[in-house]
Length: 116
Image (tube, rainbow, N blue to C red):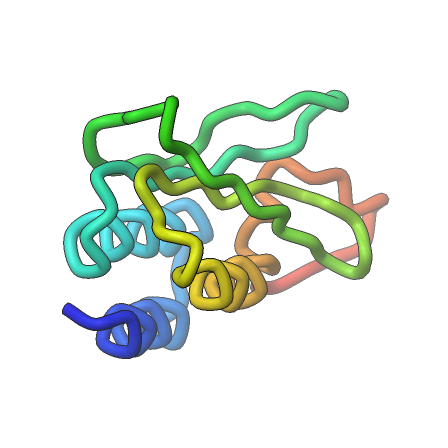
């Protein structure tokens, strides 16, 4: 599948909504199965470190690309994929923007209500 096809599939997942964890599982599954990355995952920022959340595929950490996922200017997670060519960077940056509100699962909202 092309990047545009994978992006359309991700848009459909996000538009269907639902539990943030289920949405993020769908997104990493799409990155693995349809975009062709051997592994994709989301790492949440928790207590100053990164904690692995949903993932799909077989990891190849020596070929990993990680991109920050920010919400209201704060880094809340990182989108990680293995074996991504450099020309995929803008596609992955777009995905990171699209999933940002769903990555607040482990983020302290300071008591403010939020809805992805």
